[in-house]
Every structure is written in C-alpha cells, then in structure tokens.
Image (cartoon, rainbow, N blue to C red; front, side, top):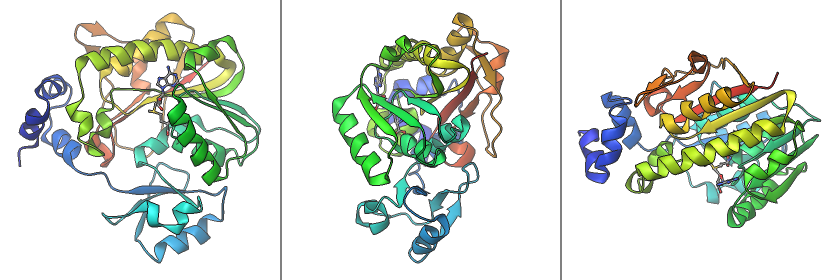
Length: 310
Ligand SMILES: C[S@@+](CC[C@H](N)C(=O)[O-])C[C@H]1O[C@@H](n2cnc3c(N)ncnc32)[C@H](O)[C@@H]1O
C-alpha cells in the first residue's frame, strides 16, 4: 500500500505540509498503523510486581524502556481495557507509550508543589502523583469543565490524593509568579500524533488550527514560565509534529525570557529538531529538545522540551 497516497485521499494539505518535514515512506506508514496498546502500572494502588504478575496471566508484556519500570506495551491487538478488573480498580492506567515521557522528564519529587496546566483527562497527572508517592500537591487544571469531570473520575480511580482540580484558562496561573517547583504544560495542539488513534485527526487537520494552537501555546508557555520558581523545571510537550507548535513556541520563550534548556537524555530514537522552517530560524539551543516521529519508536508523534528557570 502507498500510505502517502492514502493520506492524500484523506487530507491533501496535511500531506503537502508534512512531506516537507519528513517524507520518509516510514513516516506515512507508521502514521497509518494502529498504535500498540500500552499501560502504566499504578503503584499508588498496589505492588508493581504483583500487578505485573496478574497481567502476565492474560497478556505478554514488554517493558517501555524510557519509563521508570512501570510502563509496558501489551503484546495483543484487541485489549478491551473497560473489561479488565485491573483497570476498574485503578491498578493500571492505559496510556500511550510516548505520552509517558513528559512526566519522566519533569521528574517530580514527593513534597513538591506541581502545576499541571492542561491536565485532562489526567494520564500524566496520575503519573506525576505516582512519582510523588502521593506526597505534596498537584494543581491539575483544564480549561474545559466536561474534560475536568473526566479528570476527576480518573484521579479518583487512580487513588490520587494530592490533586486539586481547577477549571481555568491556563494563563490564569501567571499571577502565581515564582510559585511552583515544577510545571507541566502538555499543550492543546493540532494532534497529528493522534492520527494513529483515530483518523478523524487527519480529516479535521487544517493549517488554521496549527496557527490557532501556536498562538495559544505561546500565551500558555509564558504563563507557565512565570508561575515557575527560580531553580524549577518546566516541561513543554505536544503530540504533534508541526514546528509552529513545537520549536517555534520554545524559541519564542527563549527570546522573551531568561529561560534555559536542558538536554533530555532517554533511551529513545528521535528525529532532529527543526531549526529552520518557512524562512524562520530557531536557536541552536533547540537541539536539546526531543522530536519524536511515529516511525522512531513505533509510537505517537511527540515533542518535549525541558526548560529551567535560573
Ligand atoms: C493534550 S491535552 C492534555 C492531556 C493530558 N495532559 C493527559 O496527559 O491526560 C490538552 C488539554 O488542554 C486543554 N486546554 C485547551 N485550552 C486550554 C487553556 N487555554 N488552558 C488550559 N487548558 C486548556 C484541553 O481541554 C485538553 O484537555
């Protein structure tokens, strides 16, 4: 099958734009391929080895190398999480493997004050709470009430005791200047990475959405940086490939503030960050950020930057 042609039938403009970014046959083939199911074992609810043994009675598991030992691919194509008792009890959290990277990079510690600025449906909030051993405080915010309701249900099922949910535009948190030890901005985006989950994201993709999100992301990243304590860590991430929503947003923060980037070192295959796009040039510092295309690790596409405040 010619996957590029298949995508052209779905959305010609999407192919025109991203063929300029990565026209490897594999890029289109992996964007077409369904995602491998993956889960995180929730140590807030039980012992890792015991939960793993329960799962191994039903599935073959493969460890996800970039997690802290709690992430696994499930080697089966038709897993119905809703019917698994381990899911209902909150012992496992279904979560796409590359989406586990931002909390690993954030590396929160017990007792800290953490802001998760765009948190719903909460897979990363539960991962952060797990790394914090349910000690400290997480402000889990989302702009949308209906999504915040799902976030609350997921936090309850996962046994998270340290999250306070708020429903606000993330930029609201700019007023809490120099407050948080760590901030995660897992930004709303045009979701090219999600195409592997649902082709509707290819059908509904448009350049207008990319520009809309890029503007919103710049507003949110400035607020997230303001809310961060000196010495703190801000992780910016998206599940999309567009440079306007990734390198451009982080470059904007570097230009407007004293933010610095730290190199992300994880056992991952990555694609070189984009330093030139449509006549724009970005800082060489952006080489420290991580761009993941679907074929790199057979996951969703992702972009992650680790930012520190001097
Ligand atoms: C990529 S999703 C977050 C996924 C989540 N971090 C997780 O791991 O489960 C982006 C979220 O941003 C929220 N959002 C959109 N605009 C926002 C804004 N202005 N401020 C805060 N959140 C916003 C959306 O409702 C959506 O839930």
